[in-house]
Length: 531
Image 1 (spheres, rainbow, N blue to C red):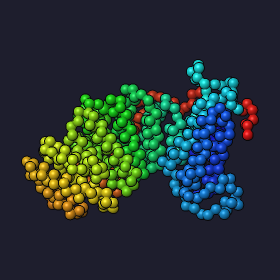
Image 2 (tube, rainbow, N blue to C red):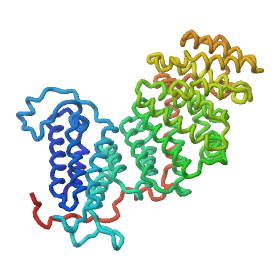
Image 3 (cartoon, rainbow, N blue to C red):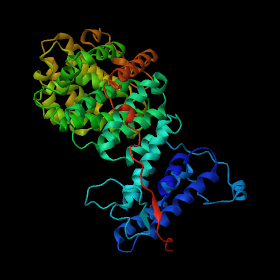
Image 4 (cartoon, rainbow, N blue to C red):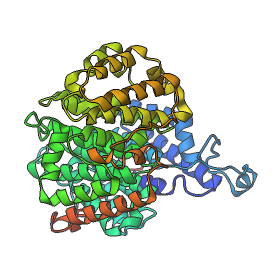
C-alpha cells in the first residue's frame, strides 16, 4: 500500500512499450493483483468503496482493458515464465496512443478515488510522525490524498528531466491526477517548454498529442477565470487556431477539442459577450486591434492565404474543413460538434445571422437541420446574400462545391444535399432576383454541377478569391492538400508565438511549477496486512 503510487507509475511508464508479450502480460498481471489487494485492505465499514473497486476489477476482464496492455486481442499470461514466453506467438502489437493511455490513467485514478473517504487512522497504515500533510485544522487526511501527492511528485520528477520519451506520458498522467490549484500554472509551463524546443517538437505527433490532451485536462480543472487567467486562455485559443494548419490526422481532433474548451470558457466567463456583434467581431477586437497579437495574425493570414475579417466564419470553417472531410468518423463528429457550438455561442451575441453563414455552410452536409426546406427558406434571403458585393454568395457556393470534392471517397454522406431540389430551387429563385449579375451566373453553374453530381467540373468564370481575402481557399480541403510551404511557415509562426507569449517575463513562476515544495509524508505499516 505504501508503494502503490510507485507501482502504478511504473506501469504507466512501461505499458505498451516494445514487442515483448511476456512484459505486457506481466504488467497486466501486476495491475490485476494490485487491484485485488486494494479490495482486501479496505475496512469493512467502507462497503461502497469496496464495491466500487470490485466493479473496476470486473472491468479488468473486459477486452478493452486487456487490449490496452496487450496491444490487441492477445490474451495475457500473467507472470509467465521464460519458457511460456518462448511459446507465445509472434504478434504485431497495436500502438498504445495517447488517447488510450489517457484512458488507462483515468482507470487508475478511479482506483485511487475509491479511497477518498478512507482515512489513514483506523486502517493498517499511519503517517510517519516527523512529517504531516498540510490540511485545514479539522480536515481528516485520506489515503487518496497521500497517494495522489506521491503520484504527482513522481510525474514532476520525470518532467524535470525533459526526457522526450517519458515526458509525454508523465505530462498526461499529471494532468489527470493533479489538483485544481496546480492545473492553471501548468498551461504556460507546458507551452513554454514547447516553444523552447522549437519547430521539430511541433512535428512530433506523440508529444503534441500529449501536450494538447493535458492542456484540455488542465482547462477542465480551472474553477474560476480571473482577468489574468482569461488573458492566458485567449492566448491559448490563438495558439489552437494557428495549430489547425499544422495539425495532421492524428492531432487535429485534439486541437479542435481544445478550441471547443477555450471558446466555451471565454463565453462562460463573459469575455465573449453581447457587446460583440459576432464571434468574428470578438476575434478582430481581441487579436487584430492589439499590437501584441496583430503581427502574428497578419503573418498567419499571409502564410495561409485566409483573412480573419468580415467573413471570419468562412475562414474558420475552411481551417476546420480537413476535419469535415476526414475519413475518420470520430474526427468528423468532433469538428461538426465544435462548429455547432460556435453557432450556438454566436446566436447569444448581438446575432447578425450573415456573420454565421460560413458555419451554416459547413454544417449543411452533416446535419438535417441545416439542409432542410425550412432552414433554406430562412437562409436564402436578400438580407443574407444581397447586402455586400456578392462575396458571401460566392464563398457559400464555392465552399459547398469544394467540400463535395473532398467527399469523393464517401459521397453517400454528401449525396442527400445534391438531391435536395427544394433547397436548390430556392437558391436559384433568390439569386435570380439579385442585382449582382455574376451571382446569378455562378448560381446557375452551382445548380448545374450539383444536379449532375459533377464534382470535378470547374467553373469557366473568374473566381475572385483574392479580391475577398481568400487566396488560399482551395489549399485547406484535406490534410494532403495543405502545401508544405504553408505548413512550414505556420509551424515556425506557432513556435515564435509560444516563445513570445509564454515565457519567464510573462509568467514569473514558471521555474517553480514542477518543483516539490514540501517533503511528502510516507505511509508506514502499523500491523501486518490482514489477509
